[in-house]
Amino acid sequence: MNTTRKISPPSTNTDDLNRDVYILSNLVAARFSRDIERICSEEKISEAHYRILWVLCLSESQDGLTMGEIVDGLVNKASDATRLVDKMERQGLVTRTLSHTDKRKVIVSVSMAGRQVFSRLTPNIKRAHIEQMNGLSTSEKKQLASLLNKALWG
Image (cartoon, rainbow, N blue to C red):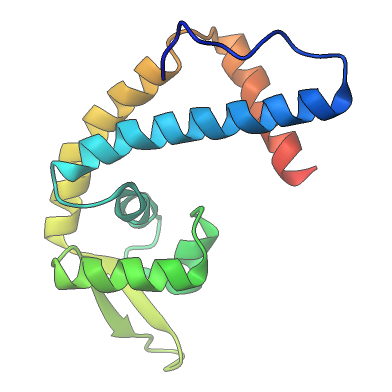
């Protein structure tokens, strides 16, 4: 994002302020996503694929997760997650098996190749997050996280 061009100072008009917050939040999200997409493209996966690897690799479960459990940890709809996991399975990053206890459930597990991709990408993504938040102090990051949670969940 061009840092020399900024939206004008906050308006006192509620409609204008709501619009400005909407536009700014979308611009920030798009910029952050582009940064992560660029890093993920080195491994021929998308940001959304990385998020699935993140959920699987950081899960406490050694047996894998159901699609519902994966979706709970993501910002994706269930239909998107199924499509993403389909591609990841074709790439050898994950495997799918039927649950031993409930044959209606599919368990997704990260493969060794998936863990390796996750391990290679994670340091670069962490650096990108540091750069993305470089202009904010720790207390400002906490405040921003709190405000975004409030806007998202009420």
